Image (cartoon, rainbow, N blue to C red; front, top):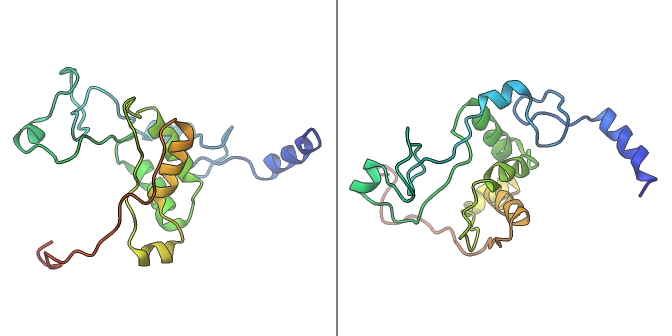
Length: 173
């Protein structure tokens, strides 16, 4: 193992870790530079228990926003680690369309801090087979697999199956 330490040092010197947001050198993998870090808006409580919409003040556990009270969603709740802004958008687009699969681990680390204690299973949304073929990977599956390795919650990549939409035509969607 000690024989690899000098090799690792040379690799880190030649290829230092880069900020996932802008590509500038940083101290370690999956870390953001100060500018990109300040551009991320991390989400957390207080929020709507159903849609994760941030609240201005704490309304208590299980509180719902007006939209979810009027029309409750058919799911048990969603969570988002960061608000969708320029840095988060760039990271997601580079993962999905730029083939930067290492960013899945960066995203999973941010999501891990908000993982519900009662979570029993992580289920990624499947891609259409042509998108999977053209991309070569399912970004949701990569994130789910990494999130499962960070937590004690298993991931099942085959629970959901993508089916063809046949009841509504494209114009109606």
